[in-house]
Length: 309
Image 1 (spheres, rainbow, N blue to C red):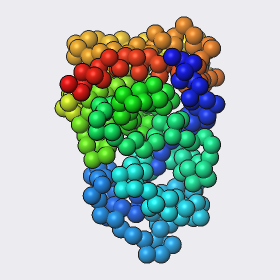
Image 2 (cartoon, one colour):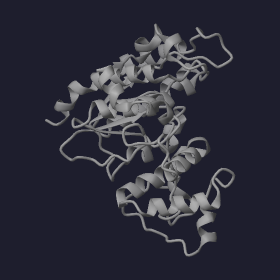
Image 3 (cartoon, helix red, strand yellow):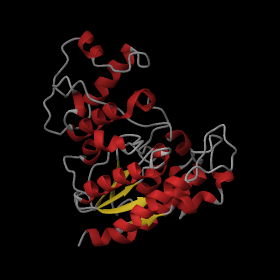
Image 4 (cartoon, rainbow, N blue to C red):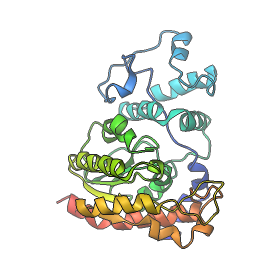
C-alpha cells in the first residue's frame, strides 16, 4: 500500500507540504467583515473591482504579495468555476500570512510543488455517489491529506479544513467555515485532531473544548474518528523528547468516554521517529507522511460502504 501511494505522489509530496491555501475573495464578498462574519456560499454576491487600486485594497498580504502578483491571483480566481471560486476565496481568508502568500505565488506561477495529487488544499468536486470525508487538524494532518485522498480515490470525496486548524479555540472561531464546503456542512466521516497547539493548556480546559467540538461534529451526521497526537518536541529540544503524552492522556480519557473510534498515529510513527521526522522534531518526511496516510485511510475505509447505506 505504501509503495503504491508513494508512486502516485512522487517527489512532489515533500514540497507540497509547503503549498497550502488562499483567503477571502475581494471579488465576491460584499461585506467589510469578510468571511469570519458569515461562511461564503456559492450564492454569495460578486463585487467586481472597477479599477486596479480597488483590487489592491483587497490584498491583505501587501508585504508579501506584489500588486502584479495579486492582480494575477484575482484574475486566476475569477477564471474558475463558481464552487471552486468559493473554495479559493475561503482558503485565501483562512490560511493566513504564513501559508497564504506562499500558496498564492506557487499557484499563479504554476509551481511544480502544487499538483492535484499532492495539494491537500486542492478543490474537491464532490461525486454525489460517494461519501464525504473531512479531515480537521494542524499541519500534521495537512501533510497526510493528499495520501488519504489518493488511497480512497473512487471510494470517497476527501476534503480537509481550509486552514492549519491550530488550537481548539480556532474551531469556535472558524469551525463553521471549515464545515461548509461545496454548499453543504453534512458529512459521513470526520477525522479530527487538536493536540500540539494545545500543549500547556489546563487539562480541564482542553477536555471541555474537545467535548464541545465533538458534539458539533456529530451534528453534521458524521461518524467521528479521533486521531491521537503524534510525538513532537521543539527544535531546540533533544531529538527523543516527546511532549505529547500529557495532551494524549487528557484526550484519551475523554475520547473513551465519548466512545469515538481512535486512529493511533502516535503508535504508527513513534518507534521510527528519528528516521521519519525532520530536524524540527515535529513534522514528517515523505516516509512518515505516507505511513500516516495509510493508517488513516485503512481505518476509515471499512466505514465508507456503511455510510452509503
